[in-house]
Structures are given as C-alpha cells and as structure tokens.
Length: 149
Image 1 (tube, rainbow, N blue to C red):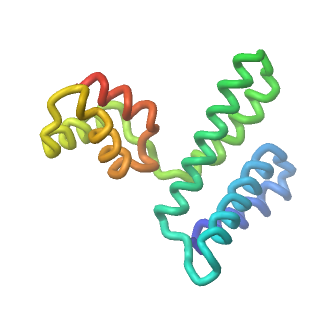
Image 2: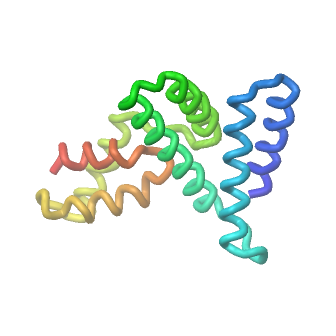
C-alpha cells in the first residue's frame, strides 16, 4: 500500500503546483477512500493489493454511475468533471483487458466449470470476477457471459 500512497502523494503535489483542480480533487478522493479502507481494516493490518484494487474499482463504478445520472438530467458540467476524475482513477488501475481477452478468459472458465447454460450464469460471473477483478468491468463480463451461455 505504501507504494500507491507515495505515488498518490507525489501526484497530489504535482497537481497542486500545476493548479489542476479536477485532478487534485480526484487524487484527494482516492487517498481518502484508501485511508478509510485502512481505518476499517484496522491499524495492525496493511491493505493488500486486492483491497486497494477493490477501493479503486469502487471509485470507478461510482464515477461511471455519476456520469450516467448526469447524462440523464442533461448536466454536461457534472459529466465533464466526473469524466476527468474517472480518467485519473483509471490511471491508477491495472490496464483493462480487451473484449477478446475477456472472452477468451471466460470461455476457459466456462469449460473449467462445465457450465452448460443460463442456469450457470451466476457461477460463471462470480468465478470470472474473482479472476478478472480490476482488469475488466463487471457489466462487460456479464454481457460476455450472457453471450457465451
């Protein structure tokens, strides 16, 4: 966790000096979310890579939902602000897999689990999200699973 916190702190300093308010706000939000997760976990435990990834994934999901809601009500100002923040958060996430790579992984998971039809959808999605966590969006995974089953 120290690595990402150090990187966030350095990026925060750079954003402050450059007066990049949207980037600065997003970095502060990420640091705050990570610190809250650390507090929830307890002082004696360090956040694992998986914990950090879960926090970043939650931030991405929240920003995407905010963009979707702002689009519904026609608030372009909120959309642009949230999109800038989303791009900052995505910069700290592991690189996302392509649609083809996700499909390949899910096909392998389906064959490993012996999934045969739509009744196995939940099992396949659950297993896929454990393996693809942080590298693929849940909605994309669900749509590909539906496609393949």
